Length: 163
Figure 1: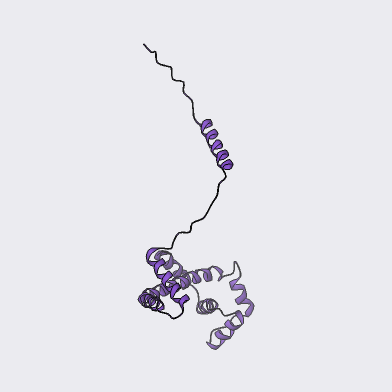
Figure 2: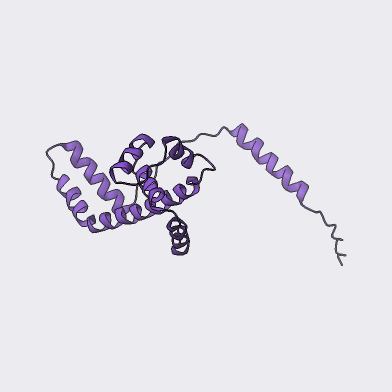
């Protein structure tokens, strides 16, 4: 998602009042409408009716599109954060894989070895055994020749006089 799209989406969310913003956050965290009402009350918000919260998130409801936008933005931030965490720990992951090469469990050692080789050299290609009968190959060839013959324009070239 581009920064421009993210900024526009964030601006759209800024137009919401406090209770609606907080409701979006709580829904994204996985709380159901009943629990959202309880949390809003604990946090001293003006609490809407349960049916109102339900209607906010129905397709076409006032928060339906905002919630989709909020999810998109939050998921993007979380992906970026996870990517940074992975990036910072790639060396540790590699060291762990190399340590597993010395495992007493042969299966673990073999899996570590395969994983290292696959990552460094690429996965081995899989050979698929196929058999063709001469009859099928011949018929396919004949069809191909016939199609080629139909598409080819024949030009008559006059024979040269021989002297």
